[in-house]
Image 1 (cartoon, rainbow, N blue to C red):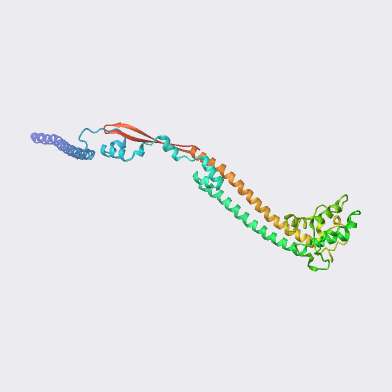
Image 2: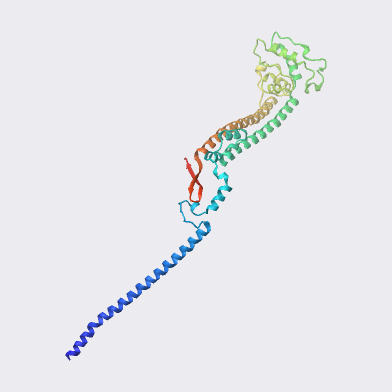
Length: 358
């Protein structure tokens, strides 16, 4: 019984070392397998590296040692390709000043362009929005000036036709003749105001161009009537058809007597002096004055548009020069080409310097 217990104990004692050996064997087997996998990975990595290295040497055409410069242009292109690049692109060796100056804008040229055509200098300097604004103002002002100038011309034709129909230099002279004593106590009428063609009974004598009137003599009478007294005579009648002629007959009440509604009817003036004239708003004198004023308003708008266009030219020229200057100051690009020595020869290396100023 004792021996059996001893064997049982020995068997029990030998069981744990056997299990330990078995587990250790498995660990060793796994470790060996891991080492085999690592060796295989290293083997394939070396093989792949060798293939890549062989390909690089074959493509470079140089079986000599490989020299890495850290420059991608040198390390990734063969000497043959670099030589081809150098020989085929001589423009790559331009100086820094040439490349830089070619990208700048001339403020003088920009200003001159906008002085001629507003907005052109801004477009040249790269600011298309401001160019469009200045050019739009130019077009808008010129179109507006043209339209209102045409309106002024049409209105001028209208009021001149109205005056030719309702105002008469002959009627004006006849009224002075009839009232000269009331107008000036010492003034005397000169019959030479009319020429031989004058017929006081001819109804057509009031139609322009008033060939029955001697204008110099009539003007002499006007000055005599106005001398030394205050009776409303302040001007002499300009020759028919002149701009001043159409202006004065609707501006000064001295000439109110020449309108056909002042001769008789509601607006008849009788022997009243011009200083006492008070033409009503419905009188032809006032109607004509408003027609002329409308024409003048149209011409004033035209003048204003032209003035704005001139100012727009000047402002656009100044702005274009300023925009070109800002363009040059805001973005300065300088490209330097340097020759870097390498085992394959001198290689052009580009350096780009960019600066932006807010």
